[in-house]
Amino acid sequence: MSQVTKLESKLESKSEDKHIELHGFQFYLAGHFYHNPTPSKKSYKWDGESKPIHLSLELLDRKTDAEEELAYLVTVNGHPAYVGEFSYTLRDRWLKTEYYTWHHKDHLIDDAIKNGDNIELWLLLDSIVELPNGVKLNISKSVEHHLLKNQNFDWNKRNN
Image (cartoon, rainbow, N blue to C red):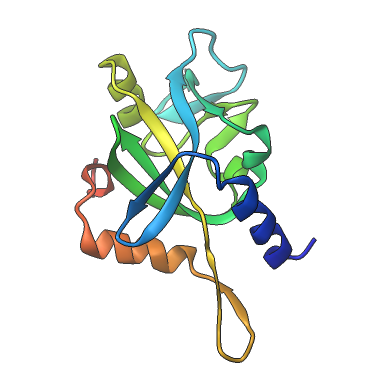
């Protein structure tokens, strides 16, 4: 299936889903983060020590983990806190084993969840543009840069 056909299919299937708009770009709700009381079998190194992974992502549609090259938002109680972009798949960027997650901002997500905040992952709905010559380009990285330039995201600050 071509990327354009996949995009058309995605747009049709996401038309009923929950959306938010930010600076003219549409994002659809992909899932919710939660603290999993059962640690993953894998661990990660943080501050020089090995720790089990407790942070998990519940995807609204399990097929979403195969989404490729998209800008994304992480929201805290509905407010955008972080914008990013992944170059391969959602699974490669966020999901380490089963639906446990590890990301360099996972400690912020975990702390917010422990505070009782609702943390959600939103994916860019339409990442392909067609140039006048017919070439189709993925603009996810450009969307991420545009949003970073035009909005202050608390979790995108350095050393955070």
